[in-house]
Amino acid sequence: MEIKEITNKEEWEGFLNQIPKEEKTFLHSWQWGCFQLLLKEKIYRLGVYENNILMAVALVIKVKATRGNFLLIPHGPLLCNGNPKSEIQNSKQIQNSKFKILNSLTAFLRGIAKQEKCCFIRVATTFAKTKENENIFKELGFKQAPFHTHPDLTWLLDISRPEEDLLKEMRKTTRYLIKQGLKEKNLIIEKSTNKKDVQTFNAIYQETAHRHDFTPFSLNYLNKELEAFLPDNIVILKAAYQNEVLASSFIIFWGGVGFYHQGASTHKYPKVPAAYLMQWQGIREAKQRGCSLYNFWGIAPVFAETKTGNSKSETLNPKQTILLKEKNHPWHGLSLFKMGFGGYAKEYLKTQDLPLSKRYYLVRYFEFLRKWRRHL
Image (cartoon, rainbow, N blue to C red):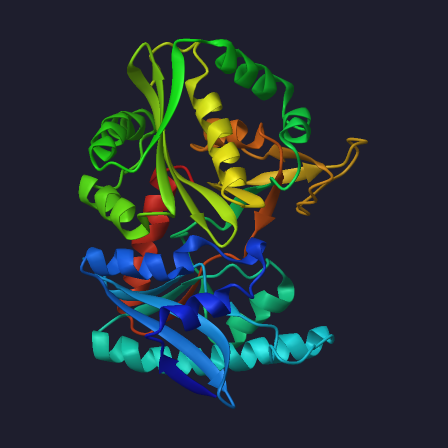
């Protein structure tokens, strides 16, 4: 196999169009790479070829950190199941092909990591959480990371159906609050791509971060994210009550999916369902843009309970009742909010680390400590 940098946007995005919607996110889009460049980060857009056929792509970002530099593959690499020009039905053949691709990519990344003085490689993959996929990474020398960089458990909603059906399948309270919001004449949802509205979002975002005790992205980060996805792949939504913005969000549209990536709200006027109406408008906007899937981004750990209520398992079957595991999790309230719109959980393989030096183990200890402090 041959690893080469891809400099052609059409080749990159053309390959990604072959990947099922559930198995990819905008973190591997061409624009996300452009966003990293706007932040002055170093990136590699790598393609894995066999017999001149593109088999996989990997966006690789050099992350500079005081605890130790590392290479990050966000929600990737993304692979075709074997040769895209042939149909491989055998699951063993698919796993062998996957191992072969990852083995070649890992060997290539070791060279980049040495050149960039990185102490480990981190892969936040969108591979399904299965024993087979776990074993592939183990065989390649990876360890489960102590901390996820990007969500490995996300909440998805099929929005290809009529709006009436989507409303019927929502939690009763969510549906009621949306209808109340639609009746409230003083509550208006506005959409914008104006940079001035990033400042409006940021003011509420800082308040939200303080309330939920998380580290927010900088204003520069938010401005650059907007810039990278303009003019057609992003919108800022604002829910204003009596001309005062109570909630705001960034919605990204890519690959036939609408992504609720950034969100913020204030507790002022708690009886006004601003966030619910704003989220519903985000779903409707995604539908109008031709998206068939809506990604609410990360949620807290969940378990699935069958309708009889007699058994519990880790199987995240969309036909089962999905419940949160830990009520004390910092994402508990936000997760309930997202899940109320209907949908199902999609679980990816846990983030994987490949140690390259002894310094990695100091990083690992630091991240375990941070995870404990944040009650994650």
